[in-house]
Amino acid sequence: MRKYVIVIEKTKSGYSVYVPDLPGCIATGKTKELAEKNIYEAIQFHLEGLKEAHISIPKSYTEVGTLYLQMSTTIERRSR
Image 1 (spheres, one colour):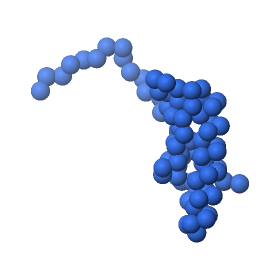
Image 2: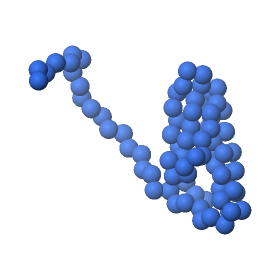
Image 3: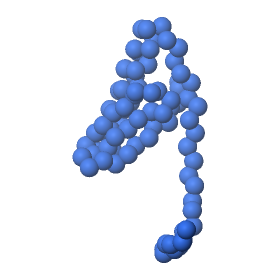
């Protein structure tokens, strides 16, 4: 079993999803759940295509983290 990071982005019409370690592997959906279902299917299709073309399956190298920034609510303008 392989594990791939997916990135889910909210759009005007729903959700867009892509897999950083599988370039070109993308999906959309009106709901987050539908987008996740669609990317699962897209990953399977993508990997099957790679196998049929005798291309090695990429390993997952992408890691995800969360960075918390403390910011003031006002922005100071700097003079140049």
